[in-house]
Length: 231
Image 1 (cartoon, rainbow, N blue to C red):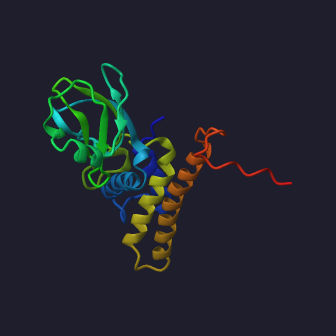
Image 2: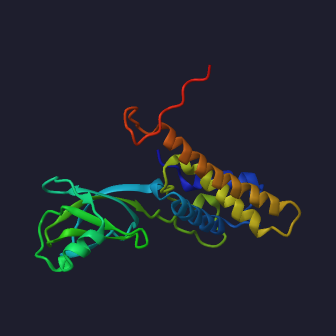
Image 3: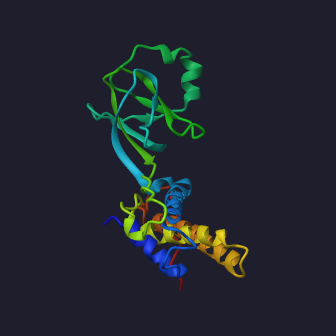
C-alpha cells in the first residue's frame, strides 16, 4: 500500500520537535524527501523494478523509456514471445563487423548491454519500426510537488514512489540532511552521521534479506551447498 509523503514528513517533524516548521520549513523537507528517493535508486536500482513492453526504434540501438535509469533484462519479443538471449557484442563485432547495417527483423535473437551506458542496449538482428520487446528496467522515482514557502505539512500531497518498505529509509535520510544543516550545533553532526548510517545499513540489510529468501535449487552446481546443521 503506498505511503503518503505527508505521513513520512509528519514523523520527521515529530522527531525534530519543530512542529511550527520554522527551523526546517516544509518545502525544504520535501526537497530532502525527493533527494532521498533518488539516493535509494543510486544504491538499489532494483527498488523500482518495472516490467514493460518497449516499442523499438528501427535499427540495432535501443533505449529505455525516459523514466528508466538502468536496464536489468530484455526478456522476450512482445508479439511472438520468443526469448531474447544476452550476447557478448565482441563476438558479433569480430564475426559480422557490419551487423549494425543488416536488414531489420521483427524478432530479435540477442541483445547486448554495457553497464557503462545503462540506458542503452543493442539488438541482433536490428529491429524494425514494428518490433517490440518486453524489458525489465529500474525506473526513476516521481518527485513530490514542493509546496509554496511558508506552507504547512498539510499542503504536501502525493505518495512515495518507492515500495512501502522504504518508508523508514526515507525518514532516516531526511533526518540526516536536516541535522547536517545544523552540524555546527553540539551533537547534531553526530546525529546526522547516525541517521545516514541507519539509512545505509537499512539498504544493506534489505539486500541480505532478499538474497536469503530468493529461490534456490539444492541440486544446482552453481549454488554453494548449504552448510550442515550444527551438532
